[in-house]
Image (tube, rainbow, N blue to C red):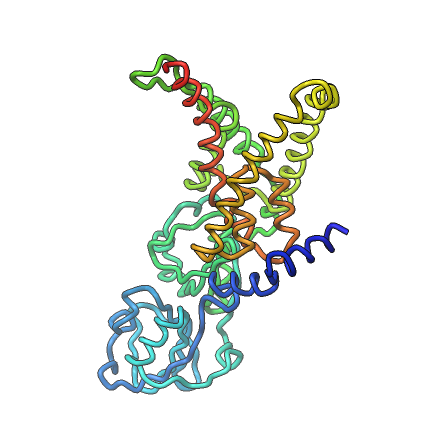
Length: 384
């Protein structure tokens, strides 16, 4: 029944087609196509004959990577100092614009199936799990120099990137590595690729983060001119510390990564406990307050305070800023710091991440303002 009511509201009241909104979000965020492309280009520019790979204009920008070089019947993984000759075929990886520039510089695009370039060359997708490489830049690992292996792609939280030598590795990054079959396993061992670690939860970093958050939340901040100190509290402290630790990623062997399944379980438990506490605290006197007290009046104020600003923001976001409807749902849920509202927004289109993305974008700032604003308001009214 609820899903039927949702369909009626979307289709007839607001004239919104959810599937079209989801397609629009995928198109705007680049999820409807691969962010990286591959082409094979035959060297036809005589000015490139005899120069090294790094000397070809465009490779120094690190927007395009050459993962394989075909010369006659042989296939090799080129290094930066590999000499290029006429009729060599370069297998390039990069974004569409970068590949277009390289095609103009090098020569003609040729149709060479990837399977024909295999030979002794092997390609693997490798997960970063070795604590020793976390936070390190790719060039400091010397993988290309030691093993002749090229890292052609990097997938981080679902986003594909062209890695450069200055790219820092984070736990859970997925690298596309290409190299000779006899040495590729040695390069993989440097990165880790221990799949089981992705399912393990490191509890020590979690409790360290919570402890630091509680400490930060209990620290008073004195502002000149105000009679009392401000505190982030038990909600604001852990939130700020979590943002900082997530940005750092790892410290030594400690890394702040949680498997999606564990993350989801903790969130659901948190929502259930939160709603249970609210119900236990307000359930006993709810009916009495509603019937005998000013309950109806306060409920009316609550409806107005909640509904009117949300409708105004939603209409401005839709009509003026032309935001995606699914993004607006997540935005409004985040503005209320309301996980149940996010769960409802995600159910509208379960295989689309627009609502979660917009929710996560605004949630930290709104939560911080919710913690500080009441204290600031109380002090200002006190002083007045």
